[in-house]
Image 1 (cartoon, one colour):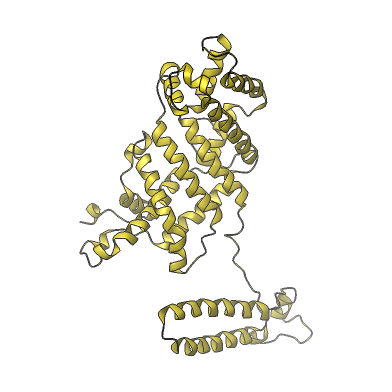
Image 2 (cartoon, one colour; image 1 turned 60 degrees about the vertical axis):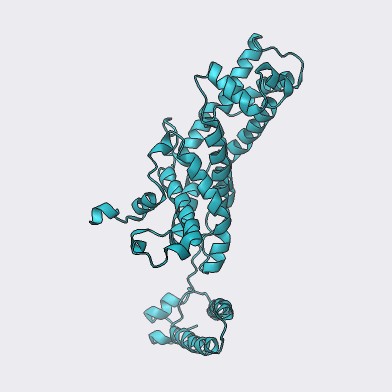
Length: 364
């Protein structure tokens, strides 16, 4: 399709669209019809364009058999934005599971398993032939075949920039993961709060002092997190996540066996983790907070993995984000109680810093 024909088609379609929408009285019907018309316009332009660029340059330079045509007669390529679909969702889902594993690592679950294996091997734990003894035996036999703790630490370093282990030379890292993830969670929490209290604060004199987490803010942060995670999780991240996830489940199942719980006078596996951590590992590892961060963080990262963040309709976006509002609040509430979260200044200041909005104090 030539440039002149494409412009004429767009102009006529826009005029016809305005006339059609003017005859629709319902706001709901108008919004739905406008969405369908915009989609149809894109389909018409895409189908009318031949998509061929082989002769475009020669026509533009006047090298064709008809000489140099006018600009209106030259076709133009149909450029398609496909950046949002270029990421590999499998890697993003693996990263969500890796985050879940990381939080359990911070709970000292893997260290507890190591301590139990030492106690079992040295005969300092009063179990011998129950299901817990069998589980510990299998853990010990399978351990040489598994990824080592250093491999897990390298994966955390690459995907999240967590830990002090030096990254491999030349490895791609997501250096700003924590900052962007906290901002993303804060944006969802702010969006959720604004929807709940919008009627109360509407018209307030302080309305312009709050950085409302708009749809664009969530989409911008989510898109960047998708891209950065995709770049940083090539290699063995997927295989490691599957194997270590299975290992973590095996450990948790072993800690739930009655003879291991009885050996430490515990009612649940979490009691076992707490008792063993206090006795042999120098203290517990924020079990309550980390368990909530693991669950909520995995849900949020899976949302990032499944969502290309291309929705422009407010109601559709609201439908997608609303279920995650309480999840974001849960993550923030748990994060505040961890050592690294004690410096968290709140949702609003975090969004101000991320968006580059000056604080209220600096504006006075």
